[in-house]
Amino acid sequence: MENTLYEYSPITEREPIHWPDGKRVAFYVGLNIEHFHVDKPSTSIHEATASLLPDALNYGWRDYGVRVGVWRLIEALDRHGIRASVLLNSEVAERYPQIIEAGRRRDWAWLAHGRTNSVLHTDLDVEAERKELLDIVDAIEKATFQRPRGWMGPALTETFNTPKLLSELGLQYVLDWTSDDQPFPLSVPGMLSVPYTVELNDLAIFGFKGLTGPQFLQMFTDHLDQLVADSGESGRVMALALHPFVIGQPSRHKYLDLALEYAADHSDIWLTTSDEIADHYARTVSASGREMR
Image 1 (spheres, one colour):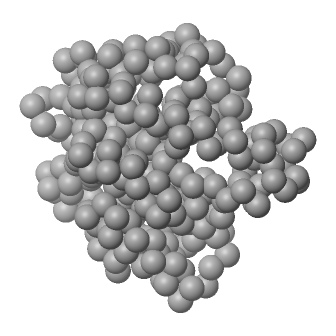
Image 2 (cartoon, rainbow, N blue to C red):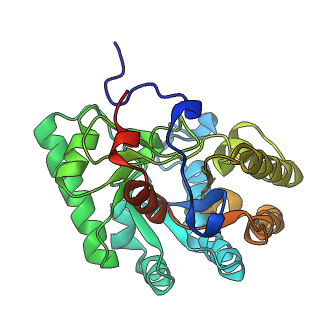
C-alpha cells in the first residue's frame, strides 16, 4: 500500500529553514526514560533468557538505567547546559518520581512515549487507541505539570490513526519517522514529523552493532560535521538518541561527555529541544512551504 501519512519531498526543493541566531544545525538529546515489566520479554537483547520468568539478565540490564545510569547521564547534560527532550513512558511517572522531579527542576521537555516499552503501540482499533493515548498523555501531564506536545511510540511504533488522534489531544509532532534531516508536515493538518535517529542511537551503536566508545565518538563528530556542511542554504536537525541503561554504563560515560562537549562548543549548533524545533519550524516556515506537494 502507499504511504498516506506524508508525501515525498526532496530536501533540495523546500523553503529554507533558518534557525535562531544564524545557527546551522539544531541539536537535541532524545532521552528515553522507560519502564519495563518483569514478566514480559520487552524486546530483549539476549535471546537465550528472553523466555524466562523472571528474565533477570535482560530486566536487570534495563533496570540499571533508572537506578544508576540516568543519574550519571544527568551529570553530563548539566555540565554542558543541555536540556533533555525526554521520551517518557507514562508508567515511569508512577514508579520513579525522583527522575520526574529531577527533570522538572531542569525544565526538560516531556514527550509521550507510550505506556511502557514492554508493550508496543500496535493493533489498536480507533476507540481503544483514543482512550490509550488520552490515559498516557493525562498521566504525563499530571506528573510533570507539562502537557506533552510530541510523541514517540515504544520502539517507534504507531498505527495509521495515531497522528490524527494525537492532534485531537493537542499534540503537534511525532518522532517515529526517521526519514529526514528536517521537520516536515504530515498529512494530518498541523502535525509535523521532527527528525529522530536510529543511526546515532546508543542502543543500535552499542547493542546491535557492538561498536566501542571511541567509535561512537567518531560517528558523532562525523555526523555533526556533515550536517553543518549540508546546511549552508537551509538548517538541519541532529538528534542524539540515548538510553540510560546503555550510555549510562561507566565505560561509555567519558565518550558521551566528549560528544556533548563537541556539540556545546560548536559555534554553528543550536542546543535545543524537540519542542523548540517544532515550534520554530511551525512559526517561521510559511504555510505554502509546508504544503504537501
